[in-house]
Length: 104
Image 1 (spheres, helix red, strand yellow):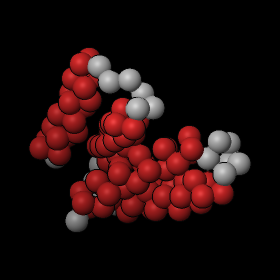
Image 2 (tube, helix red, strand yellow):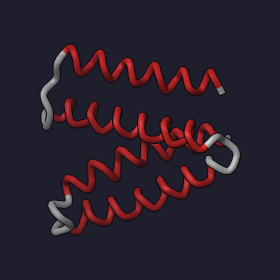
Image 3 (tube, one colour):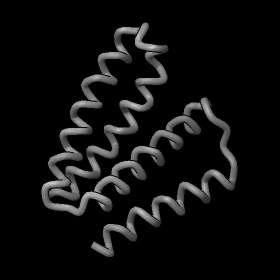
Image 4 (spheres, helix red, strand yellow):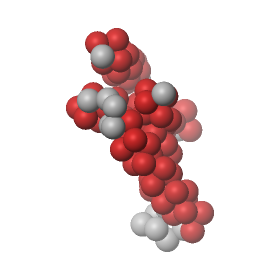
């Protein structure tokens, strides 16, 4: 269960990171609210998962999922350019996340 919560928290990290960018310095209400709610939920899930999973592994997986999804979303929406090297690096990051799970 801790791993599932950790993965969902990583997804929520991508949500709050994206919402933070779209809030334009908290000047837009909708993205600012999404940022706040998803940030609290993401941190709460990370904290809960860290009760049973190692701190280093938990944090690395959480950040890795969040970073991967944030970049993937930006590329999918055209906010960031797509390149073969970026895709390969993201796949490598995903491989490292899976490796951390398998090593646990």
